[in-house]
Length: 479
Image (tube, rainbow, N blue to C red; front, side, top):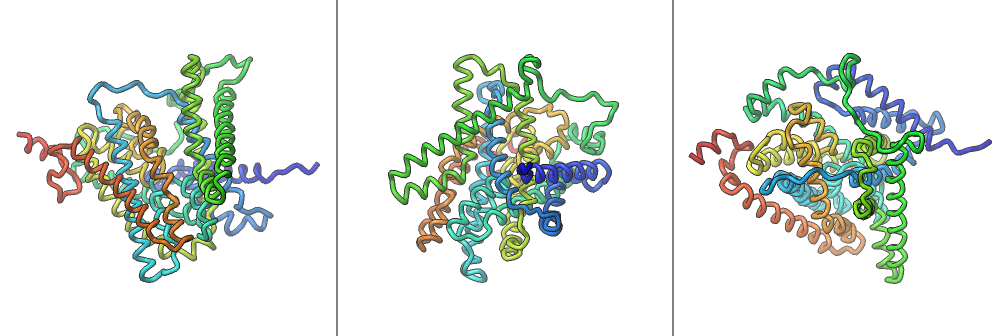
């Protein structure tokens, strides 16, 4: 019988790449030293397979992009359904400050990416798509799923291969996260950015091979909330995730129907909303979580299980995203990609330590690492860098970051909804749309700078010529 196998053969190939990547991490010091996520290694294995060898097996990477699109939304749903951490004590600004640091990077990367694009358009690449530079924050600070989904939407505006270009920016961002992150850790150690207590723990830490040894007590990843003979807990939690995703699909269908009454402009907006379906997936998850809380059913979902669902979604998404890159398309844009990614990566590496060392009062280097990892790779990349100096997550840094994600999401919704403005500049020939996006990002940057000044107070511009504000300088100024 002729049943379709394409989806499962692609999953099988991804699985082989993930297992090979796990083996490489366990055996080779290079992967251990730089804490390269297995999903990233698997992605580059898939990149070469699908671009050079898949055709000999009657395969291609055309469906990987769709897989990335859906996995992104599923990861948002699973993480949003999690029970929120306990509120912090009054006056604790760790959560909001973390959100502030991330939003500042969104704004900086948008402004930088678009200004570099404008420079290229006026010099060597006059035909460059005006929204090209937005793939810097989409690929670096938001991740491969968003870069692909929004990039795909721009293909309808005339940006050929935008999805693959977006995935390429995300892949380069992961390289900045891994290699740049480990360089940042080693540089921070040399320059005494890290406390003596943390340094001692770091020196005692074994090399991370990525797999727990057989004689080590294994941590608990999830807990049962249902009787197994009735329904497996993973099935129950997974069913809620899929239910929410179905509801988000129906919500977008309803919005598309309503917008159709607005004519062509409404339908064009509807198409753009489908490109950011992950936003509506998260909103739907929040509504469902509210209903569960209303009926006192939130306890039936398990945070650990939802984290595992999000984890497998992110791992498959990252690997599939890199595998979906078409090298034929990327070669066409390789000079602008390298130009923007190199300058963007350097700016990120300088601005995050400067900002975080003055913004935060406690665990400053820990918070710098998680923000840097999240703003060049993804949330798991930030956690991986944090784990180098806080292997057991003994500090509140990880939980602050998780809680800040919801705060960040709501604050940047207007920015995400405006993400197509530079694309309209290309379609209409009116560059006011392009400068409008820069203006919106500038407003966000001003918001972060004002908030930064109010929170950091005297620390905000103390010793401003230095990338890192040392603790002894703060104490000396106070004295």
